[in-house]
Amino acid sequence: MDPYLYDWLNLVVRLLHVVTAIAWIGASFYFIWLDNSLEEPPEWKKDKGIKGDLWSIHGGGIYEVAKYQLSPEKMPKHLHWFKWEAYSTWITGMLLLTLIYYVGASSYMIDPSKADLAPWQAISLGLGSIAIGLTIYELLCRTPLVNKELLFGLILLGVIAALAWFLGQFIGDRAAYIHIGALIGTCMAANVFTTIIPSQKALIGAIEKGESPDPIYGLNAKRRSTHNNYATIPVLFIMLSNHSPMTYGHEHSWAILTALIVIGAWARHFFNLRHKGIVKPSILITAVLAFIVLVLIARPQPIQQLEAGDQQLSDNQAFGIVMERCATCHSRSPTDDIFRVSPGGIYLETGADIMRLLDRIEARSILTHDMPFLNKTEMSLEERALLADWIKRTKN
Image (cartoon, rainbow, N blue to C red):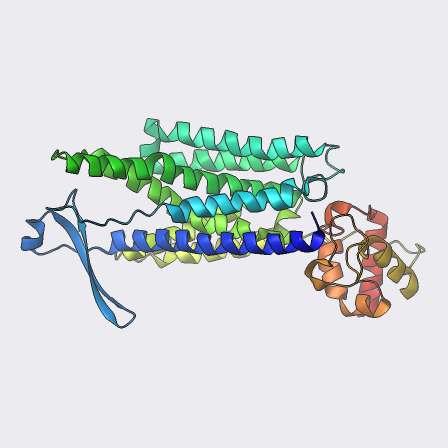
């Protein structure tokens, strides 16, 4: 594909994915808040089968929202089904995953320092991890374990951690993170497709037949909706993680990911309880403290210092290393086989460019080894050490 058109297609699909994700996650946040905020209705409403109601004001108007225990006295003519928000998010997400990581598998997925894979092998590992994770989740949801929420959550966390570790042994760290995000997003969309919508259809079908709906339908749908709600913050983090090399670029990136998933779900728990009128600041405080501890623990170790008498780079020698290893992508006319426009608009083809971006070079090539991307230009550890020493001397 023409690189120019490819970049526009990338932008359009990415925008669609973000917009649909906002719609889906916004609906998830709203309905969990709504369900947890319902108040005891007056007796005359209870007589109509109303379980709870809520009055609110928004956009200059006052709203009355009521939730029925099972079914209303008369079904409305029009009933909105919240499903296409989920389906559209998953479809656009898979399109984006295909467009970036599968079409460009040789550049975005294959890390030669880990495994010498063909593109089809790397893609198979990614798709296989999604299929395995989804299968395990669906099987667990059909066992009595699903009723033991804490144990169920810990088992799922273990599965995610194991898959993240496994992928990290074979494909690029960024690709490993994105595939765990794709796995979680696929489970969330599958919840809508396999359980939430079928349960709601069974509920409506029973009402239309004049039968008393089985409460299990509502229970199953609510359980899967709750699973989706707790997964929202972790999956949002993973969507943004490609901008944060200190996470996926860490030596134990799978552990960093696992910890961030726990912290995100724990923080979400605070708000879910708060909607019910249960305020436990300790949850939010411990989530923030855990995050701070993680930041401190994950801090990269300083690169090995040069010993006395070792070579020290001159400015021109340092410029030469950066230009040789980085300017194939980060130039005004890239020569890389994938990137035809400099990623992020970052140029590293002159001494002035390099001096202006010392902090970014240090963050991405020294503190983490995120750049060069998947080390395509084979920057050596010795070169990184020499650059680290030069940057330190230059800043001082």
